[in-house]
Length: 456
Image 1 (cartoon, rainbow, N blue to C red):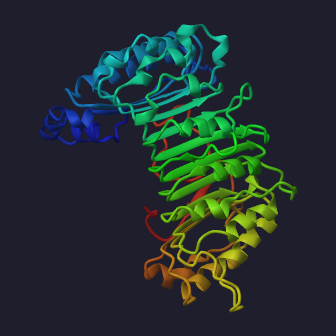
Image 2 (image 1 turned 135 degrees about the vertical axis):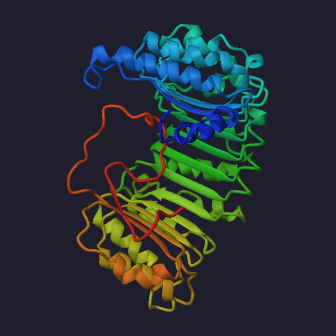
Image 3 (image 1 turned 90 degrees about the horizontal axis):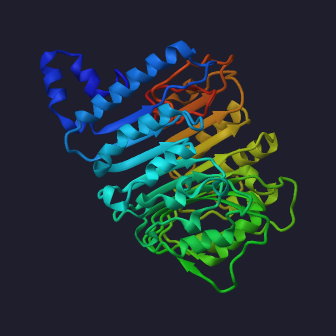
């Protein structure tokens, strides 16, 4: 809810546009609600009640103008257990449950889960997408405040589910697994952990799954029974966050999961960067089974250095997009750029020659090394021309290299370089966008420097 949003902005142009805005329910069918913070350090207590009343009234008026349109609502709670204001905000959304289509509920305290538990699957007949963030230990709560008691998870049309939780409750959720097309389980529990074996068991329930994102905690003891192959024929995007023994996790997943239509794979997490033992991942055989594989992202911290570069070298030459998040080790950044830069040795096979988009985060290499890499790839006959380059540096901007790349930019190359600012920028006390991923995908604390509009 902001003056810059279309329905409000149109209403401020003139009376005619205001009439159009108020008579067009579809303009009011999307809403993000950020509950004002009750933290005295951010908002003085004497101002809180006024801010709270204003926001609740605005939210109610906004929804009242949405007619009978399906609703897309996101709610950012203040996450103070037992806060009456949070219950009031969520309670004001409940009467519109029959029109919920996409719902995102973030930082929910247990009392808010109890409010949701009073709804049944019949109360949300058109609900298609549900994303929740509940960072409470579930076994310490009464049954009415646990997600296992929330029956809207069993909605007849609910095909997209995202759950962030500190307790592994995936197997107990009342979900229609067989109709899911998108599933995110960011479980951060250690008791019990969401192991690679449990991840494969969940995947075996989801024959229609197209996109999947898992946080897996495994020290190498959570593998499935040998021979229990899991096929996901429709899965095209898979993202794995690995903790414990990432190499063992990936080896199990890649050995027992068959994904013939996979287009994108993302891997992140933290392993031992100096360990070279037990680092085989079965990655080449895994991606070779998919003829559609075209996009890959990986954090260099997920595997030992040698295994990380082995994974990169095994990438198929048909890969179209490569995204790398690097460690603070200068050798890793320099090694990656050396791999990306075409070799003058004719014996060396080109690295990802079909890639048209390169993304590097936490890059510590020099501007000159990056510029040499870009120019070399653009001029090499065995490489396709780059279309987009994005780089986040771990330092301030020493010099401007964009004028030296102007000819390539004029020819169609989109390039965005992100640098650390020279000093921290002050934060505002409150933002109506809190809880949203806003326009540009900058990492926090970075400044963008580029020659033209941000790449799309």
